[in-house]
Length: 186
Image (cartoon, rainbow, N blue to C red; front, top):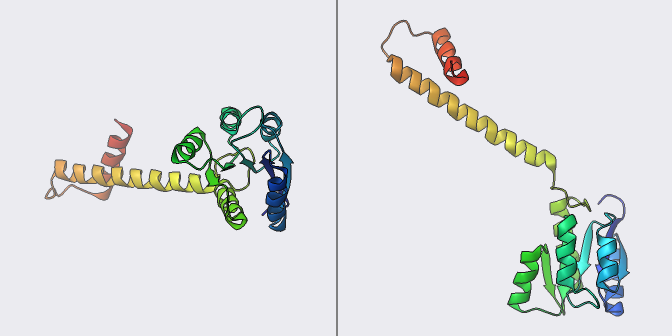
């Protein structure tokens, strides 16, 4: 973990906020609690947090609407923590853009473990930018190289078949020239 990562807890239950805050602080996180949807939305979109723990049933704007608005402007990871545990609610929450959906009552250790899992995927960037650009670049480069190697082998085989294997004038220079001409389109 880089320094003290900040987690925003948006829940109208003050005691639950304190409990969640205590568990997260014990794991090295800094937490801030807000108790209504409007305040939570403002803080979540400021870009100062690596994760938001969001309740669905909030006064004012409900958690689903807060999540929808967060997703309109940010890729901040969001963990929904709510008493609404029906399948429909879970599916709606995940479809709107929640990264994790935990039903109350919950095990605080699971909350911490799921928070860490989300942060591992996003590498702690509150803006929610893609995880590990170097890894993505490596895989793109890897598949790019395999693609061009396959094209090269295809062209070599095609050239060999077109010219014939028995032709004595076939040399490495002729093969190289032919492959380059075909690759360039000349």
